[in-house]
Image 1 (cartoon, rainbow, N blue to C red):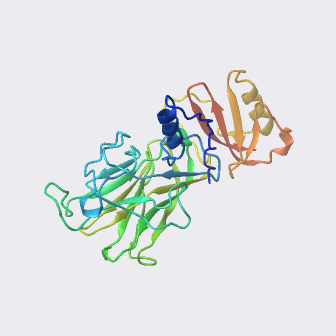
Image 2 (tube, one colour; image 1 turned 180 degrees about the horizontal axis):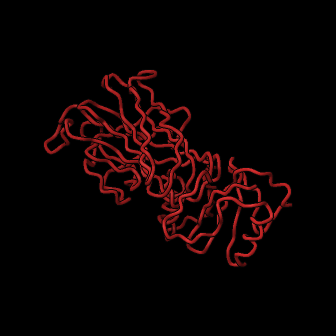
Image 3 (cartoon, rainbow, N blue to C red; image 1 turned 90 degrees about the horizontal axis):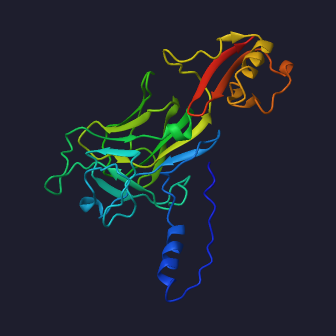
Length: 307
């Protein structure tokens, strides 16, 4: 799991001129990390995709429409999360304590569909309703992720299953279902959707296929492997052949120029060689490897068979 950001300590001198500004800065230090600004993950790190903030209590909660703009609306506990995209999912509440917990959130919020219409203009529960979880893979890095979504079991959950679809550009859709009456009533629980290779543009759609009440909590994305396959696009520059002799591989890589960095990974995701740290060639056993070639504005990944 990614370690929480280190707390920055500021020495405040409280005076008539600085007290308001100083207290405001101190307040900002203790706001939960909502996870909107992220860095690339290492294998084993976790990205938590948190829900939108909300105002009100259950039947009077909102906002009904998801702006996806990252702005905190008046009265809401947290800002909108543009990576959590609601479609006609308009009610919100909070979990009790979760095991394992969401960092910095003792009671993580969740959104849910309702089988009732309490106020004029609310979504009709018979209409299609879903939430798209859109992790920023362009920042996190492509790879195989274990995907988990939080739900809550209460007496209001229906008999039918919640449906989850992992949609990856150019790949088959991975689907999973869970009955949200599973587990201990009243508890919030993590459901494992699957372990899926995610590339830029991938997302998880969690859908309510009926007219009952299903829960859509935070998402949890654990990076299992940074490099699992290649996605070469038509017309992309061919840097490497698909199969090479050991010595030929390093001849090609060393001939790319000093302004291009490269790394070689094993199938388990371990880095075994890079431009600044080339191991002895005979220590690379024959087998499957992945090579990343880093340019200024792009990273190319290739799967090669070392003979």
